[in-house]
Length: 244
Image 1: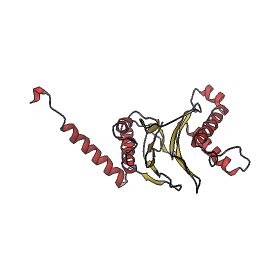
Image 2 (image 1 turned 180 degrees about the horizontal axis):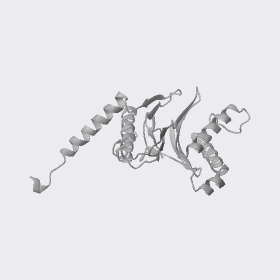
Image 3 (image 1 turned 90 degrees about the vertical axis):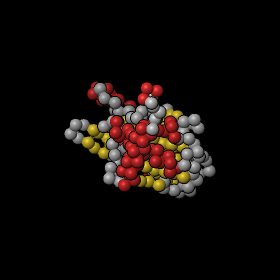
Image 4 (image 1 turned 120 degrees about the vertical axis):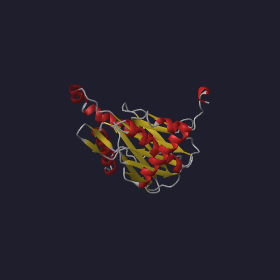
């Protein structure tokens, strides 16, 4: 399991992901689930993944293979719309899952993966998409300007309360850190480091990228101030009549 989120704002996009891939009693592993592709003066693309690491890695490798093959029918540097890239990734995911379907059925395990795709093609609006294991996809809306994959329920409440299209990129990034941290506290299958990426609209370049470990000053400060703020807010809640 994992937890990744993408937020679409008036001024750009924010992405966040955890790095835990296994959380057994005596074995914990980490692996980056965020991949960025930049094609100068063309497009910026960010992909995060959840689910089967084998399928996710195979899809990312197939994306890189097609980029290096001049005879490939399609690659992520092509297409006039970002939804075409979403469809392409969905097709790659389906191909990989079908390749191992018989073996996975025999072992009664799943090789499904989900993907968050976001970015901007020059001259067009930045967008985010959630690509399901079945290969189909959805985009965010103004009413719900964020998408999540993986263990999403613990980190959703803060997004619902604070995120709107007009939220600043910096505030959304802080919100994303709290959303990830809330999930990490409640589910052992999600864990640090937290990866954070910020794309500013119309800047076709490498997004701002940061990795927050448990010892990062920023991460520890956010944890401390959020916890203290919640406790203070709780203590200030209205009293029942019989308490007065």
